[in-house]
Each structure stands twice: as C-alpha cells, then as structure tokens.
Image 1 (cartoon, rainbow, N blue to C red):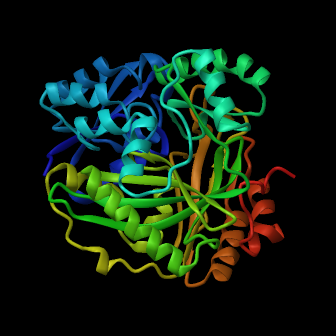
Image 2: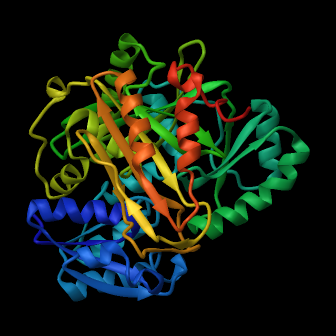
Amino acid sequence: MFSKILIANRGEVAVRIIRACKEMGIATVAVYSTADANALHVALADESCCIGPPEPAGSYLNETRIISAALATGARAIHPGYGFLSENAHFAGLCRKNGLVFIGPTVENMERLSDKATIKRLMRRAGLQVIPGTDVLSTLQEALSAAEKIGYPVMLKARSGGGGRGIRLVTTAEELETVFPQAEAESAAAFGDRAVYLEKYVYPARHVEVQILADEAGNVVCLGERDCSVQRRHQKLIEESPSPGVSPSQRNELMQKVISAVREIGYVGVGTLEFLLDREGNFWFMEMNIRLQVEHTVTEMLTYIDLVKWQIRVAAGIPLSFDQGDIRLKGCAIECRINALAPGCIELLHVPGGPFVRFDTCLVSGSEVTPYYDALLGKLIVYAATREEALRKLKAALCELVIEGVSNNLARQLELISDSRFMDGSYDLTFLEG
C-alpha cells in the first residue's frame, strides 16, 4: 500500500479523497492555486504545495508542477480525482516515467479508451448497442457529410469532454457550419484537445449510467445503475440509484452485458459506462468515463462500498475482496448537486444530519467561492429503504441545509424533486425543457 498520496485536484473531491486516505492510514499532499490557499483540502492534508495562479492552465492542469510537487514531497502515487487531468493519458504516462503510480486506469487503457470513437468500436465488438456516430472529424466538410448520412438532429461532442461540457445539439447544416469551428476552439481551450465527433441524437430518452470496478486479476463487479436524466444544458443536477425507469430484468441483463464488455476490453479500475435508454427499452451505449464520477456517492450509499478506497487498493495491486454475488442493490439513494450561481463568501453554513444523510463539500464558514472553477458547492445524498421514503428524507435535508452569502440552487432543487414527474419517476431528459 502507498505511504503517501498526492491529490491532483481541489474542492469537494480533494476533501473526499483526503478523508479516505486518512481512514486508510495514508499520508496526503494537497496542491493548490493561489486562489485556493485557504481552501479546506489544503487545511486537511498532511502537506501542501502551491503550484500556480488561479487559472487552471497554470496550476491544476500544469503537469510539470504537479509531478515536481509529488517528487519533492516523497509521494508514491497521484490521485487525479475527476476533471482536470483525470483522463489525461499523457499525464498518466508522465507519472509512470517518474516512478509514480497514477490512481486510475493504466496508460495503455487510457490511450485506447480516452478516444470516445475508439471506445465505441470496442464496445460494439463487445456486444453493446452503440449510438450511430463518427470517428474524430478532421474538417467541416467531413462533419457536414457525416451529419447528412446520420440524419439531423445530431450531437457534436468534444473527444476529451466531460461533465456536460463540450456538447452541442445541432439541428441543421447551416447551424453545423457555424458551431463546428467554435466547438473545436472551445474544446482546445477547455481540454487541450480540439478533436470533435458526431453522434445521432436519441430523443426522448433517459440517461442511465452503470458503475463498474475491476482489478488486475480480471475480476469485474457491476454496482448497479444511476439515473442522471435531470440535466440542464447537459449538466447533471440530480442522480438516483436504482433508476425508476429500469426494470429488474432489464437491470440484470444490462449488468451482465457490461461485465462481459469490461472484461473483454481488459479495463482496470473504477469506470462508468453511459447509456441512453429510449422509450422502446433499448440501451444505447454513449461513452465510458475512465475515472471517478462526481455522482459516485450515490452508488456508495446504495451498496456500502467505498469506491475511492477501492480505487486506491486496485492501483496498489490489491484484488477485490468481493464478487458480483456479494452485491446487493436494495433501497434507494438520491443526490442533489448544490451549485453556486455567482461568486461570493460563505457567511453561514449549516449541514443537515440524521441517519443516511451525507453532504460532501469543501465549504466552511468564510470560504471564498471564486469564478475560476466549477460551480459545485456540495452534494447532498440520502438513502432509505424505499424511493418514497428517500424523497421525504431528501426534502427534509434540503430544507435544513443553509448556505448564506453565496446565491445557490437550493430552492430550485427543492422545486425539482417536488415536481410530480420526478416524484412518480416518469421523468427523462425532457424534464427541464418545459
């Protein structure tokens, strides 16, 4: 096991990883930008290093400074969290070159699977139904020809996108001509990769993702699915497990197919396969996230399996101590993402309590919410024996949660979970269009 881990991230996920390391007896190193000098993850870590200015390009995306910080502090491994460098094969290779373990997939896995067009080919061969689409597009003319063949509307996506970023719905050729160069430029600025591709727009549908965990010995377990259909501009707002739109028979069949596909591609680590579930009951594979997901907490609450600890153990070469037969998907877990609507300073924070109520955050009173990073303030997650009970628990927790000094979406989240379409589980990706 690693004696010391550097966390190459910030915010609530850095706090989450540090807490897991403390429980495992592992020393931690935090890195931070000048804007995060007083952040909670810096205070909680055993050591910390400033790696640059507020802008991510100079700090949290600066591979050289992060590697130097790890070497200078004697860290044995680097946990990238999610976002930033978490799916960057070059960074994982740089870790290996410098004798550091990248807590995530192998470099070879990342090189193959970080290309969303490549992973679609692999998953099609592995037996999954894949949304029709293209490989990486080199020119606008190539995009126009492909879109005409697929049929409008289409989705224009960044190869290295994630977290709802780098996605555009395109309905006409004229619109594609306008947005194609914009999408390339935005992808280059946000992810350091200007590559984009097209896929068919499946509509209406539910967004369902499947959580997996695999070790070096070839053991693969599937930890059920999460419904992530409550989205605004492709940004997830609410997630729950199990999905109210997936029957037990559908779930069992999907989980077996996913296990088979993950084993066939030789994946190691934590990963998530994302699908669109259409109204005919077809699961269309979209992409695979080769990292920890923001909403991993929903699965943890449902299964009692600590995904961050197992990420670390698998990276250290420790095999899974359980198999698929040990996984029990009982009850319901629901998460609301609490986002800032503008920068500001936290004047008062009160976190709800009670059995099976969890609030993952990096906030304390006096925390500065800056404009440089993701707007996520925290994730409120509840678990109960039934979905009806979980909804009541979530409403009570949202009413108890107090965040003053920074405008946020607390009231909006309460409205959403009180909507009749959400309460009866009939919602899909059209939920926030009205």
